Image (cartoon, rainbow, N blue to C red; front, side, top):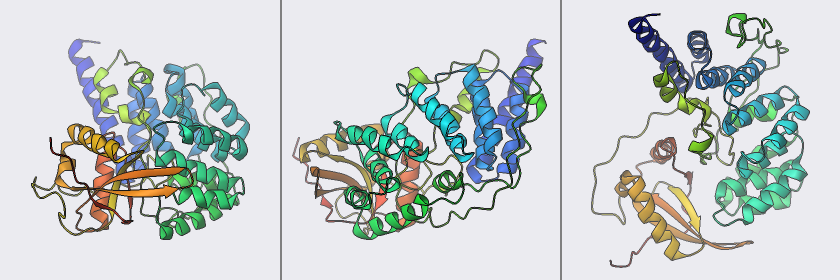
Length: 402
């Protein structure tokens, strides 16, 4: 193939991959599957595109096909903790709990404990999950995502008192009630796929024809994903109604898939396919890559009036720390990394919980709740951590003069 032809092919494949990613973001999974299949056919040895294809199948509720695509991606680049995690999810959705647990145990050193523990709980091992998450929750720097996953693990283990107590560390009373109601529905699944479908916000496909033969990683291998039985539709509106959002764990650079020698630009364009997207309901580290993304709020022009900026329509919590001094240090660090945070008013609130006192760092100054949600989504899309909650004693931070 001539150099010009190779470049043209690379550009065409990049276009397929980018359009597939955009289709996933908009919830158009039919188009996403078609475009991702074209990209995979053009660059069969690209682990990132295979992961993107798995995400398209997953969003379409085609769990067996997604597993096949994730298997291919991992065959090309094994050290992908987020792809391993997603493969575990689709295995659980198919009732392959034994395979899921084995895969988790094999990758335990690579997977963040918050993700690992929750996956164990979903795979039918809630008591083991509680042990893992209890240890993670006691570790220095443990965040609300770890605690909420621990609360859910307790719920799936049937310990509702512990679940409610731990959930209350990061949520207001009304949101705790909503969260517990959500967990009660999850605790008694009618089908193997119920919990996964609700948590990631997808509906199982009526039929899964399997991955096309032409996409087999080894062309002599004509096997395709076994078609899944037609499940009943799953309603997930209630699961998505809790207006709080958590951040996923960023994939370390050292564990990212190796660049594909064919079309490096494609790998950069679809690198996010190997990571779990932040646009899912709160409290779940394994958030959905597939929920439609609301349009981000327009950035506000910088203003010097930090305290009292606008009306307080909820707050976006950025973290919880052991002292007020750490709150100030965290704000300095976050605003250097994300300068647009200075467009909002930093606030803090003390919380006395069963595990001690923490100081929450949040921002406020939103016109409405949707703007707060959108701001959090934009932040998490850039690698930040946040979730939306109602105001609970938050007051403007008084910074010491420098």
